[in-house]
Length: 290
Ligand SMILES: C[S@@+](CC[C@H](N)C(=O)[O-])C[C@H]1O[C@@H](n2cnc3c(N)ncnc32)[C@H](O)[C@@H]1O
Image (cartoon, rainbow, N blue to C red; front, side, top):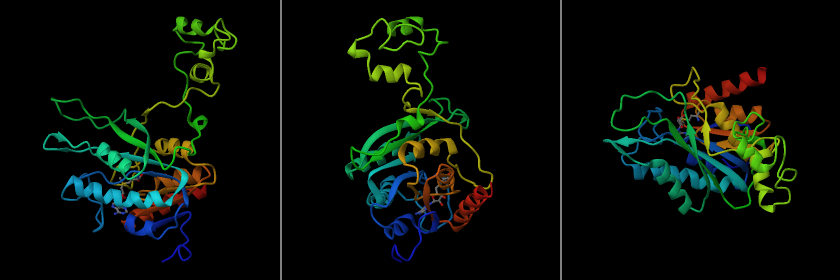
């Protein structure tokens, strides 16, 4: 198979991620959003599946092989959003997300952000000797320091300096209600320009923070945890220009592709389980019906 022989854009491809990626052309995708199988979490019923390795080192090694191909495929100004959960072994937290993140840094990736995905509806647990885990990580990696990032597309509401804010002192500091650093009593103070204006008064909201509060969602037919669409939306809106290509090498039920398509981006998804490939294709078909 060469890149001329497979029509890979807007496709769900079946096979082992590392092998399929090896067939795709270099510098050809704008953005990667993915959630690989977690270590010893689930059986995805294929001989090549990642996640059931004998040791965490072997698991990390297999992920790194896939991500080395991802590095080759990603444009120089592309973004790579990696969601990973952790694992306890005999009561000892393995710290896998950070082990993988640090290994990726030593492979040449630049780590731009560690985002906490807070899950307000996370499964309750019976543990009594430690806090109940209700978060996972999303790491934002890039290949270079000049990369595509649309901060305006994912701004969030201001918290402190709205007209309803109780923090009158804070608002007065900047001038008056609906004032700006330029117009208020601190007009002319260069210290209050740019960053502070953006922080407190930007009409589209404040710059997105690193804790994302997004409930887990269900997709009836999938027997594994699927991405909430909202989570993928934030990554795609900020990290991929309109018309660009989003890759998910562990596509599962197809969430990344569905969101990419809905937001006017192209997609390519890979999964080693043919049933999940069909499930993803069916979801995409449903999307085009509406
Ligand atoms: C956590 S699920 C992804 C769920 C997905 N984010 C969604 O929203 O549905 C991980 C997926 O990786 C697939 N997988 C496991 N090993 C693989 C491999 N070596 N190559 C490609 N896909 C693999 C599994 O079949 C599973 O569908």
